[in-house]
Image (cartoon, rainbow, N blue to C red; front, side, top):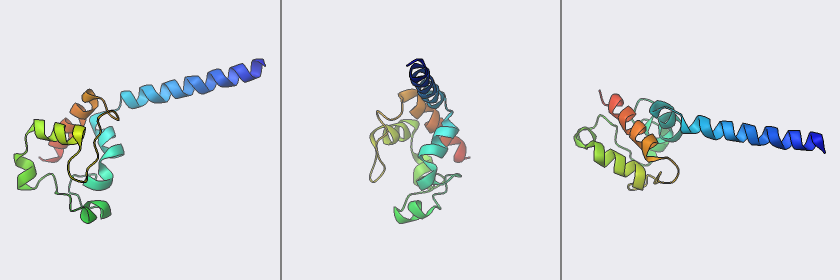
Amino acid sequence: MISQLRTAAMILLILAMAGTAFAQMSGEAIYKAKCASCHGADGQAATAMGKTMKVLPFKDPAMLKASYSQFFAATRNGKGKMPAYNGKLTDAQIKDVTEYIRTLQK
């Protein structure tokens, strides 16, 4: 019985730590985990999925003209084939990802 309680306590501790680690991920880490499969690690959308879905590179003139608010809204609410991340990422995490995307445009 005691060993079962210890095992359950360890599992809960590991799950709590994993959740905290995700909550503290940087914009770059979140981008790599959630966005790079379509947008590419460098934001050029040269991935198989990016090409299939006709994702624009972040350095495309239309993307360079997009405001911070537009990037934030697209990430939060989804746009076209891009899924919404509202409820999956916090607003603070979306802000961090949006700021990281801006670094890919330089």
